Length: 260
Image 1 (cartoon, rainbow, N blue to C red):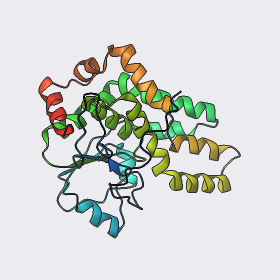
Image 2: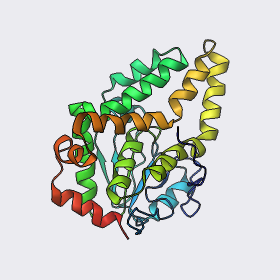
Image 3: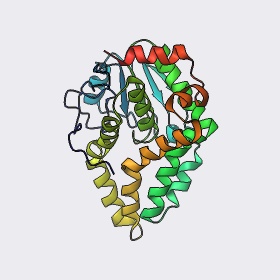
């Protein structure tokens, strides 16, 4: 179990958005890589559903984003549409079928919820359609100029895996990648507490604990995805090439953007 406490706790130099709680820079404060370089900030941003207040919208607009990628399912995007930015191009790249929400709603125990989340992360590696979505996202990030943002609903699972792949490509140590992944629990704490409290008042006993598991992250969730990469593709390089179908040029283009 990862227990290091020296990693990032927040990205203080990236604006905190009250209405888009899991918004942050994929590069953190400029994460160090294993080769001694740093990730370039202000290139790729990650978030939960993009429905900012007027004040937060002004902050997002000030970043000069050229593109926003919404990787939610068709149903998720229809239920809560994004706020469309004035300049950035909006692209919808559905990752995960709409039926995944129905499956999540059927879960009744914490253990089942935790295993559901691990299996969800494994599907980022094993499911053909899901891999195609990540391939489309990473290709767009590589070929589109300027700062870009990608998001799902909570900004933690689909978005978390995409961010972890980018950090891996940059050569960020695994320990830092895990620490960054776990920042969702810091950034989303107030939102999760409010959701769990609301569920506790209206739902069956124990359901609030299940919801809390579903809205947060654990190291084992991300670990399940990386373990599946090793099992299915032997290495992250093979996953990117054979699993996602990314060309060497695309991977190199991402690397050039990611490293300062």
